[in-house]
Image: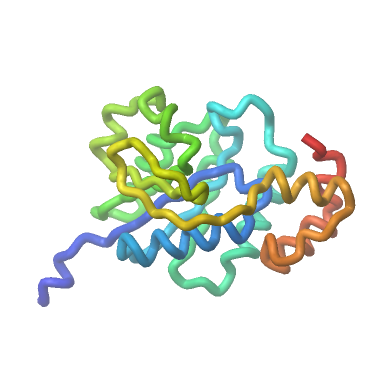
Length: 196
């Protein structure tokens, strides 16, 4: 067997509410796969993020279906609904343990948004977690960061908040989200009231 057979599989885990998933998420995910040499990147939609005070606008099922539609046909992207099936709040370490069980021995990269970095040390069982994964910060702000984590950076000015506001004020979201995601948003009348 060649040396490459002995190399551990590299798997990235990208959690978020994805309410809705948009091209900013997808561009950074692709960038992470290329920068880190990942074999696979798994999107994990959160039921309710422990640090976000309000519930997501779209239901868990709808957010999952938007995510699946967005990554369909992309061989290196995968979606995992383990957090949607667990009772809230959802802790990253439980997700990591579940994925590790399913994937076997592998190198896990936990991709977090730049805005999550200050709260990381307060994450549930953080000391164990940081020994199980490598944290990678996905930064679309384009600003200089001051933390010790590896950064995957790409300046992208698209946010889920802006997309929800555009829908609520009846403006187009074309080019901000994949076409299939736009269709689901319209079909389910999502974000019509989401002016916050």
